Image (cartoon, rainbow, N blue to C red; front, side, top):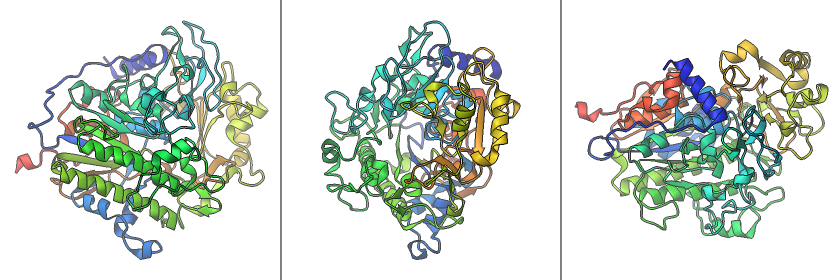
Length: 588
């Protein structure tokens, strides 16, 4: 099948059906036949390439000029460091993670943002916790709906366990997903589209699980069970996802982390409950307590237990987690106290240094645990990030409409106000109870059926100063990156009609709690740390441009599985990362 026909088949499957897992079987012995027998995959969300450089070498103006990442520095001694790695575009967490585990981009896997749009799928039966309205599903025809895969699909997003019946206080997992809050497939009897079936292409977890490997992943939302890839949701043998946007002030949540001690030796028995702190991401301290839950899950899995440490299982072949602490340290303003950076060189603030130190010590605990279990030499450690954060230079920060008063308006607000009906009401900023548009330091615009794209584009161009316009993509300029927006079989129902990337530093927000964001195409959004470490490796720095999407085929190559088992690799031609040193000891 040609690449074009394969892509079209995947698009149609994702739009009007549910993708099926294509068998790609090999030798299921993950033991003696290879030097690398497992992979620990870590995403330090927000961690730029320059952050890694500064923390392992030290930078004047932070920590007295001394290095503050001894664990990462040690891993770097036997690692390949890719300094010019780029995330997905858009650089939001949902597509960023999907790229890492699938080997593709939104054009193949169909994921653009946690909150996006699909011209075929139908609204959920019941309104989500974040306001995506429930509605009617019209069978066997395109419906069109805003899509949501974040905390709003939880049974109870205020709880760490997402409200899963009978679950441990932090342990809802997929049982916390409310199927009545999931968007529906009108071509599959209006059944709910679970996160793993919203993703069009398979993932490393599916391929490894298919070949007999035990798989595990820990992340920030139950919705991120999407990494399982299409199927029945069972490609993850162990999934852990305490809800990051749950309520810190609930006694049940406080009790759940009371016994936790962070890698910095901090007791979480007394959380930061300052005014304005509601979710874990509202506090420099609380986010470390939250992340520590997932660190403990990894440590338990290294010991061959489940994520809570309550059941003896086996050490996973592929496992890992994401850290949120650095991302929060970059963008949070907590009661007037800032994180972020001091200058365009990337000198981290004191708060950001602490978050990076916490992550480094946590990774050090994982390395020590691998060594204690005799697993270190046979484990490939991959450290990267779903996304960066922008702007690094604090002087470039420019919020629209602004922290105080109006400095303009966002593209979605402009179009919704001046061209009534052009923005679907489910995602319109003028919908008083809705979920809102897809805008951070990028604006993704899906237009209502019958709307004229050029009319919207001309309006945006005429108000370039008002919206902080940097670059606008539509028509051919958009199709050079993505597939044509529209309905199958001639168009992709998930491709935005227009993408606006604002001037560097512009963020579409009125929040006084943030000074950076991600999601856009800027260098600060997309250039992230990427390190592959194993004791058998010689230290090497690669400055050629690479993509985080290349992590997925590289992991399969390390485990001696065929990278072409990944749908997105076949569709997009994604290659294994350059300069990998697998099997190096065998050649001596």
